[in-house]
Image (cartoon, rainbow, N blue to C red):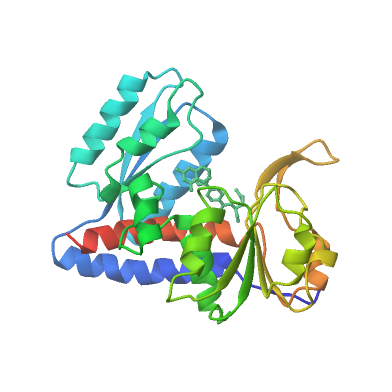
Length: 286
Ligand SMILES: Nc1nc2c(c(=O)[nH]1)N[C@@H](CN(C=O)c1ccc(C(=O)N[C@@H](CCC(=O)O)C(=O)O)cc1)CN2
């Protein structure tokens, strides 16, 4: 392997150490940051992610507020929980774990979150703030990617970045973050309608793949020495019949890239660290 691995797990641990110090400073002012989670149903993956968020909170001293509803909860019941968290001064930010059961209106639910308590940074108001360059909570995955690259001295200023995927949670907001004056990268946002994807990825100094297509980026699509970030996380059944997660980057890319943010151990842990960061930042503004 030629690529240097950029370790998201270790960097997230560093960030959690820093947050612990900030949480202690808040405690001296009598403030305890609080993160709320809303989980509807019993999907084992979602339960595991929510449990992980509360473990992270305990590690840094953030108070956990858990709300769990049954899989057949009505829209009115979910709305009532959001109203309660919006009004709760102990809750500085909260998330609704996705996906929601199909009978619930996800867009309505996300729009009912008070934008200033939107710990995921995905409320339309906050995406609008990002477009306009106004302050607000930033979406956790894009923010985590930029932070991971920054902490590994990957130069963004003047860099040509190909982002593959135009989803509202990663690709689109990431393009906005990378083109802020503070980052000053030049971004090509590629998607399923892009013709000759490889011509764009090959021209890039940094390739970030968030398409949800296992193995989409192959070694021949990467210029030698480029930095590659794997955001994909798709559950597949392996040849042994067991389920596992796989990324969007083919393993052979590691032989060509200069640096690689792997999956697992890259963007996922950084996303979790940014969720905590959004909550602490909100508490610091109190
Ligand atoms: N409201 C939200 N819902 C969902 C989000 C989200 O950010 N906000 N993202 C995913 C699930 N998720 C967090 O909720 C999440 C997924 C994966 C990871 C992670 O660290 N993955 C590991 C690899 C897989 C593993 O070992 O379990 C990694 O990348 O190293 C963290 C969080 C959908 N729902």
